[in-house]
Amino acid sequence: MLQHPPAVPPRRHPLRTLALWLCATFPSLPGCAHEGVHAPPSAPKAAATKTVVLVHGMFMTPACWGPWVDALEQQGFEVLAPAWPAHDRAPADARKAHPDPALAAVDLAQVVDHYRTILRGLDEPPVLIGHSMGGLVVQILLAEGLATAAIAIDAAPPKGVFTFNGKFLKSNGRVLRGSLDEPLDMDPERFAYVFVNAQAPAQQRKIWEQFAQPESRRVGRGATTEQGKVDFGAQRGPLLLVTGELDHAVPPVIGRKTFRRYGRANAYTELREIAGADHWLIGSGKWREVFDLSVTWLRARGVAPTPPASPGAAAP
Image (cartoon, rainbow, N blue to C red; front, side, top):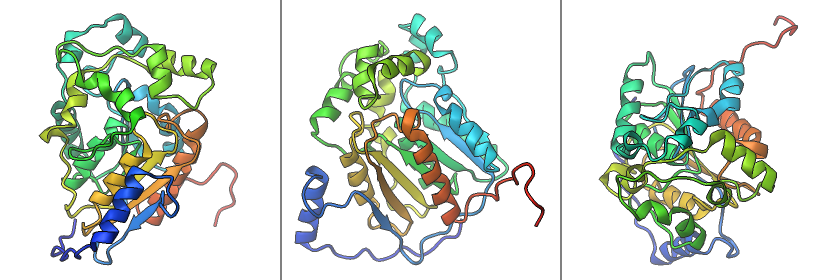
């Protein structure tokens, strides 16, 4: 990746700083944008790549990326969806094994290092797409220069980004309580509130059965420590932050605050909000909208390969 001299950060006016804080804290106020672009003219460009690495989040396995893998391959990408350490069981088997000491021992640093090893073994810097805590992981790795671009969907807050939003506190409070040696369960009722609050009850139960598993407290708490620190000023490739309007686990205020932290970086950052979406942005009724947005964004950044011709298409 090309290196550029750091840009001199502009001095912010106090009233502008106050306006940004009010919009981040009270997003329904008139004039508060739910989308944004930070595009310095000298920001590093992304290199084209055929490789995508998908990073799942807490309480999940790579199974959550099922439709994404097929759809990305149809667009000409080569797709990897590795499991976090101790996350390679079927979700139902992981629930039966609860409490699992091996799962409880996993922390965020171990997860990030696991992906560092994978990325350093690739033939080319990939696109990273992460969901929830995976969205934080891809931001850390992008800032380290291990990817050409990244998309962070419903991304967990980096160290230093926080909100007193009641839904956020209710969704994540259990992570900050209890023994680190006891992994967290995820029962259907909690899952319905945290992940799929915008879905019908029958769909909520179906998604839980198919995808949800227990999780390590160490991973969640790690995001509040140096393990969750992102270099917001790094010279890096483009980053897209995607939030869901109705997300309880990571309310859109987190995305807006994270976007603001990148405001002085000499790097391209974009924020988009999906109307009517909960935390399950990568599945159910919203996944195709988010997928199409992601591929369109990658093509606009010059990253995505030319998709294969459909069967029966006329030769150029």
